[in-house]
Image (cartoon, rainbow, N blue to C red; front, side, top):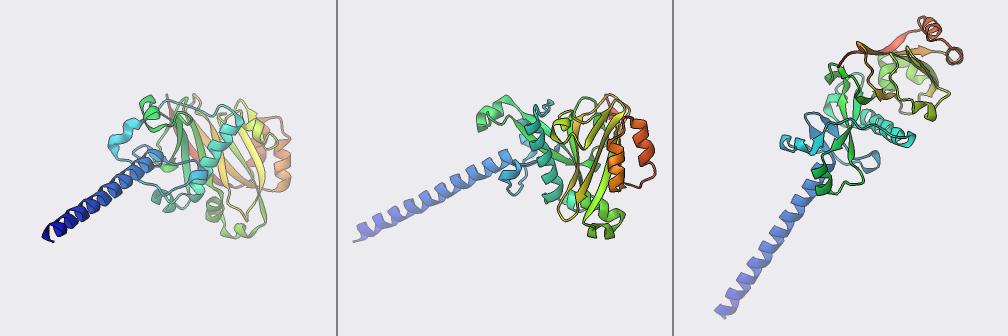
Length: 270
């Protein structure tokens, strides 16, 4: 009888240890997968694509070798749309404290190439690039030749300028980037809203304010002293007038009489 009790106790202990070990292994594997696909490093936030959103976790600093900072860029219009969509979601829907505390949420985005060893180790051979974003205010300057995206929460911009305008059904905007830097692929996405000149780029559109919207840009940082962007609040007729002009100086002449409701200027380093 005592012998049977002894075997029962031993058998029960083994079963308990097996359950504990199995649970520990499962937890470890799940956490490792989360850290690979979404998290934070000193360089910015790295997320799954928008259709695979999950809660962000922190990647320890010792895993920074997972990334190499070469400069990939969208190769076609669909890749550009995906990149812009990621940047939009980052500024409109992320729960990052650095953005939630800002009066106007605004981010800079980039594509980061993973190191070959990490691609093989974690099975990302079909997705060698990960998008990442930074709070725009955290970037003191841009680097010539880098491909970046910029997204700004439009409702935040309008709210800061005049909260009553958010009650309007539709508002009209134009923005100017100097010098020219935006991706030429934009021409394939919305050619009726974009104009490109050697001096800079122009975009005008009417926006329905009952939805979430962002102000978006993407392209290679040019060789220049600085990159400057101004966003104007205009009216419907002005949108038409601007988009029918053939001269950058004429467009600037028209827009100078309208309020600038958001602007950005950052130096460019070689």
